[in-house]
Structure formats: structure tokens, C-alpha cells
Image (cartoon, rainbow, N blue to C red; front, top):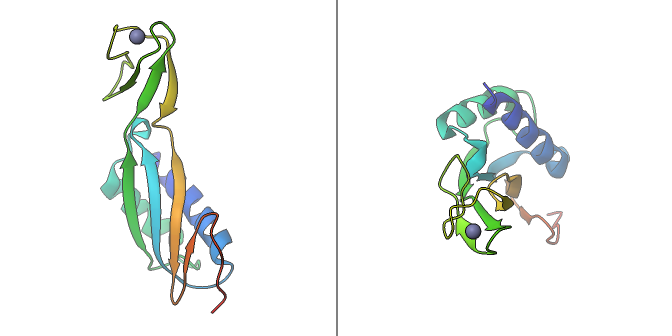
Amino acid sequence: MHELSLADSVVRIAGADAAGRPVAKVEVKVGHLRQVVPSALAFAFQLVAEGTEVEGAELLLEEVPAAGRCRGCGAESELPGFPLRCGACGGLDLELLHGEELLVDSLELEDVVMTNGGTRHDG
Ligand SMILES: [Zn+2]
């Protein structure tokens, strides 16, 4: 169950950002190619979060569509699944642009909101 290791990463990142403050909501962006089953990730998240700042937090998943640039013809296309194939010429030699993300997009603490790269407000 690879969702468990993904959930573990999410909880570690969120926990580090929260720095001891209770987390109300975690928004996560997951690339399509990671083939995450949302319900499995939500379940694993609850397990891993137990006993941490993130325990009881709501998990919001946003899937990022996979996209790549063809090294043959230069076209960029969306990649709905495997095998990864250029939408213009059918070539298989692609530079992956999106689809392997796993990032904590934002955290909502009990009384403040933090966004990655944004300003932190310490209540
Ligand atoms: Zn192509």
C-alpha cells in the first residue's frame, strides 16, 4: 500500500510546518502518475496522523493532470495514462512536466492560514 508512505510524507511535511500547532486542514496536490487512490490515502493519512499535530485534520486532495513535452516534435500534451505517449505524433520520448507531484499546497491551522512561500502569521 504505497498510500501509506505518501501519507507519511504529507504528515511529516505538514507537522514540520505546523511547528507544534494543531492543524485543521491540509491541502495536498498529487500528480496523476502517482496513481493514488484518494480514499486509501485519506485512510492512511488518519492512521499516520494519529498522535501528531495533524491528527484529526481534514485532508483535501487535488489531482494534478500529467503533461509532457515530446522530444521528437516538441508538442506538449496531456498524458491520460500509461504508456506515456505524445498526443501529436505518438512518440514515446517525453520530458515529463507534470504528474509526479506530491506537495503540501497549504495548511490551515486552528486559527491561521499558511500558504507555502507566503507570510506566516503567529496569531
Ligand atoms: Zn511528438
